Length: 479
Image (cartoon, rainbow, N blue to C red; front, side, top):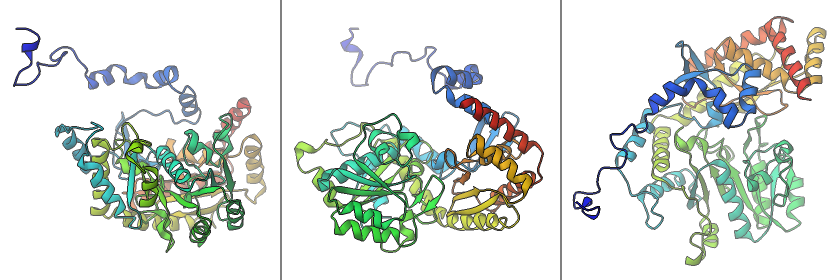
């Protein structure tokens, strides 16, 4: 038989490698999984395993489900971090998992680039149902891509170059998104960036000053800032919207972390009646914890201006945007959010957790504030009043700000098997962004553990402050 005869009506010949040794994921993990930290040190970001070892986070998790991890000894760990918000439904939700099996088994003609598959349109329609004032969606692969899309669309649609953002805001780390990142530690060394101006969250006078210059395309804002967990002041978003419309500039709501129920409404801007952003950025939880997906929702006229002719049909695109696996994960995620009352649960459980923590404020002088919305909660620590605690606090602050919060995070993991993390570099704030499926059992477990750690911190001694001295030594070495 000739090579041409090997392909006939029955289809192609058996793929090369079929029946050979091939690829066996289970065998590979069994043989090499124990090398995980060494592999990362050698081939990836070498500072990550070093940091994890320093703070005692170099654990080996074997499996995960819902809001929990398990190690090789079968011990469970409560996840109050949710992969920085990606795991809104927890890990391995059966509905999302089945959707991915189904879409793979369907063998769809995916990413041909020259047809229109149904899944992107279906997901776009479902998303826009939660933002009825918006009309169209662009699909990318991540939060920073969603922001990049919004920035490009805003600048093109308005014909203006500059974007106003907020100090301490975080919108991503690619060049455009970095230009509106309010933290200098991320921007340092990556200039030149896009023209931008930072204002304080809630400062309407500063926003109006910038708009009067006539070159502002948009104002981008997180309704609740991830760093420090600071919500926009009541009335700020609506007043900003009025100013922007008067000056023919756009409002971009970055809902990458706050969207899809995190704050107790589907989008966080919906906490303020009358706010209707021109562009909304979505990602993280839309993935269902599996396939990266980002989305930029916007008004029809903006999309029509960007895609103004057939010549411009691909003027902004993404190679993997709208792929079948991502779209199936997104559709399944939205179905779960609606069918299982996830948004209402986030509101109810968040209120319960925040009230339980707020009740501890009078008991612990190191606990200065508890704030947030839904299941996005910030726990802030501050200078104590008593002399013994004040001297120890001063020691930590002199070495490096943020060490006390890290002192609390560490025993929560080491003693109580609860994963949390600080809200940002040099901040005395722990941010809780657990899976939106947690309930009263998880609230009880966290509050009980947190109470024990704070009791230890206020006792004036113990392992907690020993760990603090270790962190101080490390901070001094880093200098």
